[in-house]
Image (tube, rainbow, N blue to C red; front, side, top):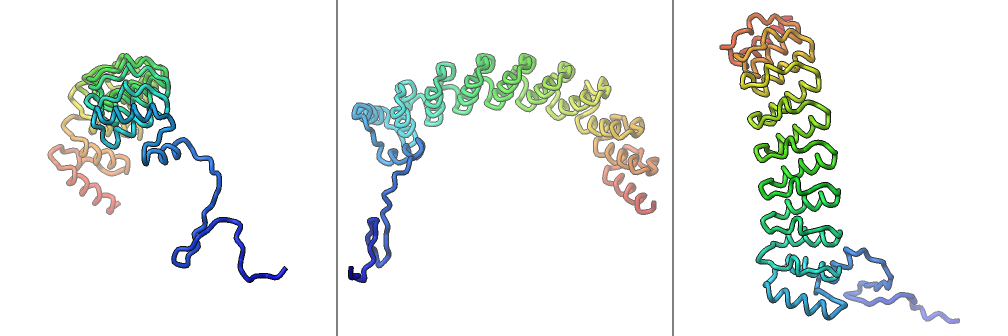
Amino acid sequence: MESTGKKEFDFPFFFIDKKVIILYNVNIKKSKKEVRKMKLRSYIFEDPTKEELFNAIVEKYNLNKNEKKEIYYGLIEGLDVSIYANSNKYNWKQMKSLRLGLENGLNINLYSNPEYNWSQMKEIMLGLISKVDVSIYSYVKFDVKQMKQIRIGLERNIDVSIYTKEEFDYLQMEQIRLGLEKGLNVNIYSNPNFNFDKMFEIRKCLEKGIEINSFLDDTFDSGQIKEIRLGIEHKIDISVYYKSEYNHLQMKEIRLALEEGLNIEELLNSKLQWYEMRFIREEQKQEK
């Protein structure tokens, strides 16, 4: 057969400015997320009843773009969107938390209170997914970070009642939770008057078996406790600086001098600034 000199193509194509544009007719299985994005461009519904409902809700509540998206996703999943469609009660992030709860078959009545912000809703939703008793922390008075610490404690089967209190911030809650997970007697430091730094240092002392009775008042702050703890761990004579008259930076310089085997006599003066102590220590190291 005589050749015509023209190249034959077994796929559709067309030219734009002499560039070949190939039209691939490939049946690609798209994920649910990809299909949603494609349909979302024009809110395509296969069921005209759902489309009518969508348009009615949008018109009734004058929904913005993000709110429309949450209603649309709910409708195509066959959810009862009337539960969260009211934009006068919920913003779009709250709508999303409620929609995800419905998609996962959760009892969203436990967090549908519009006084919860979306992140609080999320923490309660995560607790429901983990099958913990969310009633323990589902109070608007707890912020999301406090809720998270309580939820984690419940998931790890510890007695969260010790720190499920408004007077503890989330960082204090975390220190108490970590102590409970280690089996420590957290009642020793679960005092709302202790900031989380002091709780941390007392917890570390308990973990190391260090006597901490003298730390349970306002005599020493967290930085001082740390320097005393490090001195005990490094097996040096802490008695020379185990005094509230030294701040933690002064304690650190004396501790380092002891660890370096230097003469600390000149440093044992609480009237010296920490940087003056450091200068003396550095001079001794150079002369050594």
